[in-house]
Image (tube, rainbow, N blue to C red; front, side, top):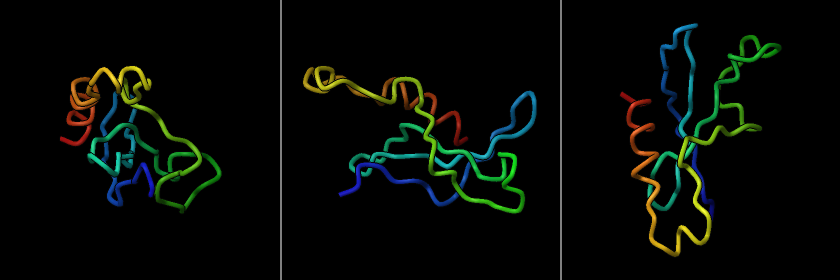
Length: 89
């Protein structure tokens, strides 16, 4: 079973210095976005290509928990949910 899935439709973010095209990386169990991959078109040498660049995953703040934190019942949603929701609106 895969632990992560990548959204097929990207989110386009407007930044101060341009745009960023992100594909959310989600937990397959709960659906929470824990990171993202950038679109291939944003890198030099990939002109005319699109889709997620799969060799790099950017982890959102709070997107990973240690085994101990999981045992204690800590939830990533409190931290990651804020960032992920802001990125998709």
